Length: 181
Image (cartoon, rainbow, N blue to C red; front, side, top):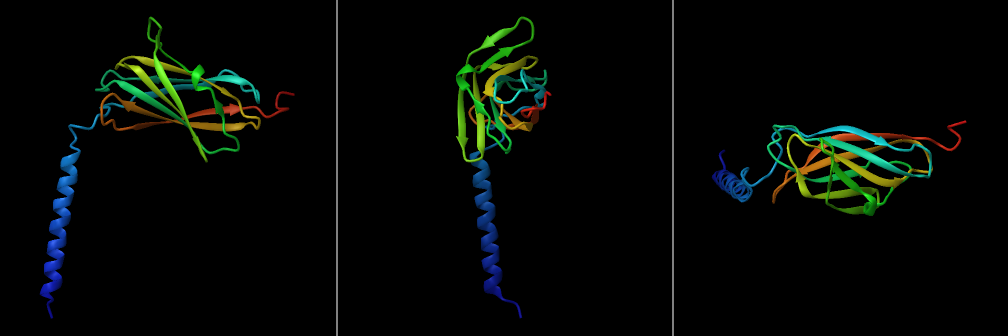
């Protein structure tokens, strides 16, 4: 036995769903989303000191390829969950273009620390153009408990509706007290 009422409800529901999907897609078209055509690359991640509980500079270098299709506007460094949360000093963070000649960049930095989230957000007031390489020097206090600490690096292109791009992990090894003897 065929149920016409059920069939008409299903047809009407699928019509509403397709209409809704089209209206949602119309609100954010691909033309309005800013993204990188070719991915920037995290080329270096290193700390100046590995001793426990000392002030160190965490260096991240990011290269913007020639065919990126957009400028780099914002970088988010996010500490992955570990035994200890690294203390960052955002006011001591610096950014440079390291292609010759080296040029300092104006930046705004802020911390987002709550629960297991520990990230530093760097807004570049002068966007980094394709073919340029940016160096971030973020000051922080090394952990008291050594081991491997990982930081996720996410970049955002210039524009009103940027599509984030996760570049990968910067990995640091910190000594534990007594490791040096």
